[in-house]
Figure 1 (spheres, one colour):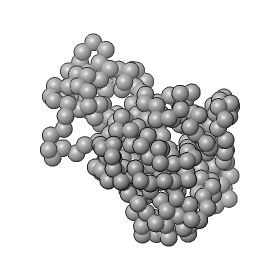
Figure 2: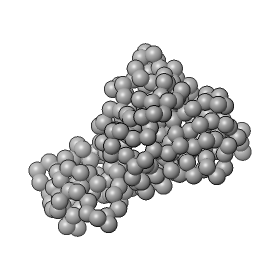
Figure 3: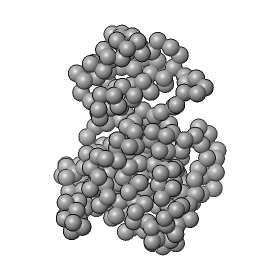
Figure 4: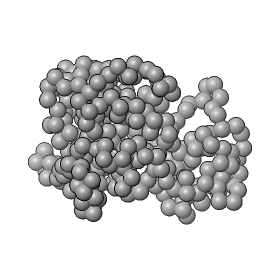
Length: 270
């Protein structure tokens, strides 16, 4: 994550909680403590916030005012989709292969799940997704039926998030949910923003099986919000760069792990 991206994430955290600790910023950005300290110093010099012991404190009210562009405390969609793209595409292709025409599925907003769009073009499924970039592809370039939840659009992350517990998705029932996340760890599927974590938890309640799409970079410790435990995951699809210890841990928890070879897939396509 580049410096200015980290600044945006830290500013978002400041709007939510007024005081951001170094450890909070490290988890949200994946940056080192030294980098976060430099970011705090830069933001303080810009007059965005003031340095306090162990953290950064907002100078203004944490809530956005009308007209502000509201963002989430995660990387932007445009940045994330450029990272590990070959692995993400290979993982997405394997995920779509798990679907049968006629299935009703849920796909959460994310750059790995977004890559499923290309492989769903000739499939016939009913898809509920809170990813509006994916919805746009499916609407215009596939034979799938597409449903969207109600809520607010977060442009930078390309997702639709509802603040309400009761909404249209409570009547939805799917055989599978395909989910990408900020990281996977011993505690389960991890997110970095409370609104995203809550939205994904709600979607997960509507699906029988959870399929997690996670490239090998997702096994580094990031984020601090557990969406669901490992026991809720039916299948995880990753690439051959994933740590063997992580794969063993998942299998010990009863998770079916599918490992794809992104390099071989890329060479075959060349």
